[in-house]
Image (cartoon, rainbow, N blue to C red; front, side, top):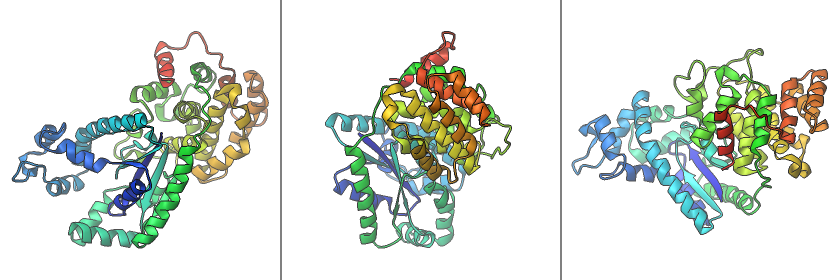
Length: 417
């Protein structure tokens, strides 16, 4: 089943788009409605939320007064984080149950609507991310009209969310909801048609080979950006059941304070870059979605934003991740080795041309996929990092070392499940 995340700024038209998707035959889930349920009296989060914020947030009938609670959390980032920590795990459990039910029913695509998917760092749970956006002045006008807010309060709520331009960078697809309802519906229909095609034409799914990842880890870089080493990254991804940006932000040295997507930039060329984690991202994406280049590159782009904001470095990391996924699939992926296609996808996500060092590392690995030492030497001669080419070739041959740490071995095999 194709899992689709639907997000966008407050009052941008997500609900309209979700209802349109439902009318077009997609299963849909509104996580805001699920949050209402878990915070309702008797709900799984109700007691904890009342204990944390006091009975002053309750209406006369004992239900949570959403406006009173909203006024508290929108004005206080710490309170907002506390509320999210109480509510999000319960919402995710409910979402997982619904997704499992739809899988059993044979549903081809499920759309999950949530305002803060990217801010919460959970957007990589989905195969495709759709962002609903509208022009800023129109967003403000709609919010004032919808919620009866004064303009200053409406602006504060908009400012509390990720800027629209930043949110669009993480989208596979964008619905422009700036115009009238017929225009929004037309844009939604076009996006839905593309998603329906993807649901009916899933990517090739070669088997994920744990030994390929173990071999790549042994042959590649041992250090990663800001202390997030590849082995540590694998262990966390396995523990979380996926790539969760807020968790990873806390593994950085020093840990990120504030939103994960505003992590301080590390521009130094001597610092290990996001490409040191690309082998793991590429093979994690293979385990989740097969040879889906857009899914792989989107995951690598998100991870790159934690430490390096240089577009060229992000594009380079994306192309290494794409090569890792394909080479990690072994000979079964031979018909899908397309370095030029990978570069085009990487440049779309990174926002810059793929740098020469990344192209050279991939070319060296493709020229000698069954000889890691030869690939490393070819990369060295081309001025690229030998470890990248060596690790890519090692992923292809999948000769896992016998002395890999037990924790890493267990985490790697967990990805296969």
